[in-house]
Image (cartoon, rainbow, N blue to C red; front, side, top):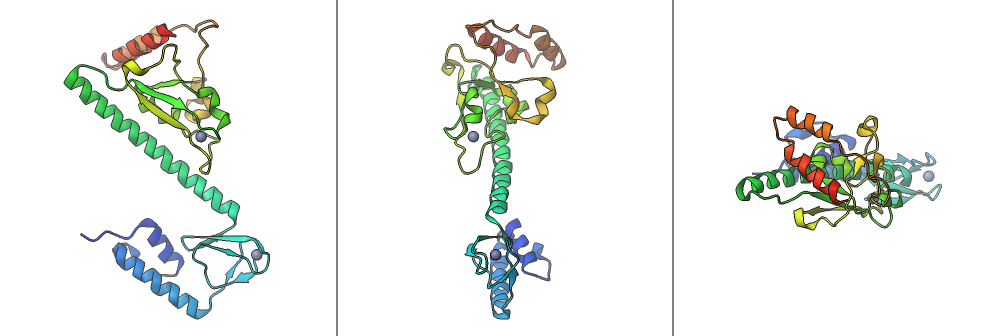
Amino acid sequence: MAQPATTKQKQYLKRLGYAADPNSLTKERASQQIDILLTQERESGRQFPCPYCKGKFGPRPKRRKKCPHCGNSIVHLVGKFYTEQQAGELYQKEWWRDSRSDVAEQVRDDYKENKSFEREFRETLTVGYIIKPGPHCPHVHHLRGLIVPLEDAKASPELLPPYDGCNHDTCECEYNEVGPGEVPRGTRVAQFSSPSRRSSSTAAVTRTTNRRQHKSAFPHVLHLVLTILTCGMWLPIWLIHYLIWASS
Ligand SMILES: [Zn+2]
Ligand SMILES: [Zn+2]
């Protein structure tokens, strides 16, 4: 079956002045229509205002163009012109959105896989993820080596990278899935620094108390309440959390 036109193609067509409904086009037809409209536009001698100086330029470049008036680099994205800074912000937004949904999907998959593994083999496959901040993200270096338990990651995927302040150009932050035997001794659990900041994201992730300093109290009451509320389903997490806490 023919693939439908992509969102970007439809956006491009609209910006090129495509009059009909692009939703009925196939991907291939959309691409042909874009070529036709681009040729018509070039022949018409259409001009565009520079996003920096508003001076007119034409024809439309494929990707980038130096403005003939101010010399700044104009970026062409899906039919529109942007300054380099605007384009960077758009890339960043898109990267952030894609990364967030990729992480959530990955965690969901791992969670499901772990559940079926537990059912089949009565053993845990994945206990969680170890955070590995990238070299260009010093704002999260304090999270290095912390573990995000699988349950926590599922409930709050924003505990995993990328984090606020990570940049699409430079971020190499990673998280590595670990099994029960792969958690190094003394590994600490990543947590949100305060419940009120839960929604605000990962900048709030902090390192829990160092074990050479005093150890913070284990939240048995919280786990008990959660276990009751979930009809016992929280019990394994209580145990894992306790084991990790006890070994730290
Ligand atoms: Zn200009
Ligand atoms: Zn990063």
